[in-house]
Length: 401
Image (cartoon, rainbow, N blue to C red):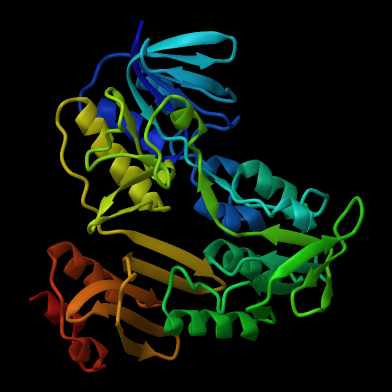
C-alpha cells in the first residue's frame, strides 16, 4: 500500500516520521536508511563516542522498538537508486516502492580531499558516521602524530579528543585563520589559544599540497615547503549535500535541494529537510548544518504533509565541546559589522554580533546565561544596546525586559 515514504534515516528523517505520528497520521510510513544502524545522532561522533565514553546504543535517537511500536516501517542498510516522480515510485534494491507523499532527508557526505592530494590510502579518515569513528578510535594512541586538515568545528573537536588521548596534533587551515566561515575573530582567537595551551600546533594560511606515503600515509607536504610526518590524518573540510537522487528526479537544486518556506520542493508531492535542503532565509537561500535545523525543519515538513503547514522561520543554534569548554551559538553572524564582547570570568565570555543596531548572533563560551538571553532576544526580534551587553555590571536578564 502506498503511503508516506521518507528517504534518509538521519536526524531529520527520524524527527519527521515521529512528528507524523504525533500529529495523528495513521497511514503507512516507511523510513529508508543507507546505514546499518537505526537513526542516530552525529555530534558525539567527534567527541564522547570517539573516546569510547558513550556506547553506541546511546547514539540512537530512539530505542529501536520505537519504530515498530509506532507502526513505522524502518528499513536500514538499503540504497534508493532512483525516484520516478511521475509514477510516484522509488527504486529500492531490486524492487520498486510506491508512495503518496515523499520526503527527502538524505543528509550530507563528508567532503573528500581532491584526488591529486592523495587521500585514498590507509591512515586517512573522515568523521561522519559510526563506521568512521569505529575505524578511527583504535588509531588514537599516545605518542602518535596526527594531522587534522581543516580548522572548522569538526576538525577542532577531533583535535581536542586526540590531544586528550596523548597524540601530537597539528591542525592545518588553508584560510587566514581557523573558524573563518563560521565565527568572528574574537571567538577564533579564544579557541586558537585554547588548543595551543593543550599542545596543539595550529597552522593557518597553509595549504596541504599532498599527502605522502605509499600504501599508508606517512606525512604531508605543505604550501610553505615544509614536510610534516604523520601516522594518521583526519580530514574535516566540510560536508556536501546528498542531492543525486533529487537531481536525477528533476528537482531544482541550489546549494542543496531547493525548497520553499514549508519544505516543498519544485516537484509537487515531494518535500525535503535537513542538511540536504536549502531554503529562503533573510532574502537569501541557505543550508543549515545543525541538529536544530534538521529537527525543526523536518517537523515543519511533517505538518505541511498533513495539511497543517506553516512557514519555517528559524533562530539557528549550534554548539561545540572542546576540552572542558562549551561554545553555544545562537543566530547567524554573517553580515555583522561590530562585535560586543562581554567577559564574565577568566574562562567565560560571549561575543555578540551586530549589524548596525541589530543583533544577529551570540557566541557564548562557558556562558550559558549569555546564550539563553541572546537566544531569547533573537527569537523576540529584539536588539539590546551593544554597550549594555559589554558592560560587566549589566544584568543580562534585565535585557529581556
